[in-house]
Length: 290
Image (cartoon, rainbow, N blue to C red; front, side, top):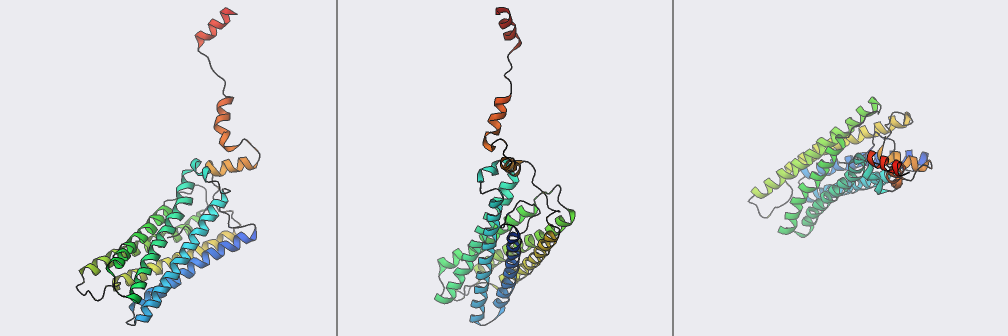
């Protein structure tokens, strides 16, 4: 559902101690969003319309926070490579996992937000078929993108990162993956139940969606809590257990900062340095002419 704290060392949240503070804020906000989600889904079991509307408002606030956390994480990744998107072509994992996935998570959170907003509007203005139809579809599309982002997160490969950090990383990624999956299942079952319903006067969210959403939110809260623990552990280790990205974009950027050959001219320069080899027969002709 969100990239959260990585097991690599190149993200930049800010200069010096400010970066550590912002990383704690990032992790704390995500944990807070999980608490809001649990409260929002619990309110869906109430028989009072005001409580249901208030619960949907909590879900909206939580999804907004999750979107902001993803955007902040994406900015930290780009700052780690000096905002040079062109460097991503030298590092596929950097491009796909650290840059593309946060964008996927942001889009998924926004679609989820719009879906819940549609149902919030329905409760105020009454039933509208087109609005509900789009809401039901977005209630599936948004979590599907979040699930894709979670799958991408868990497929990351770390070669030299501290084993303790990697275990904590998996303790963050697995609950988020399972939580995103439950959100998808809840959206699909909700669509099926609503279409089976014969009561045209009540076209809202089914209770099954609230149950799956509640369990998914609990898993999201667990992932956020483990992420906060991991951030604390990594800060205590002073980043010594993190993996340094070798090769690709990060190494090229480091070489440029050290005043070595410019990045984009590396290949051309190397080709120019290679001696031109002539065929053996041409060498014999030139020597005979001389």
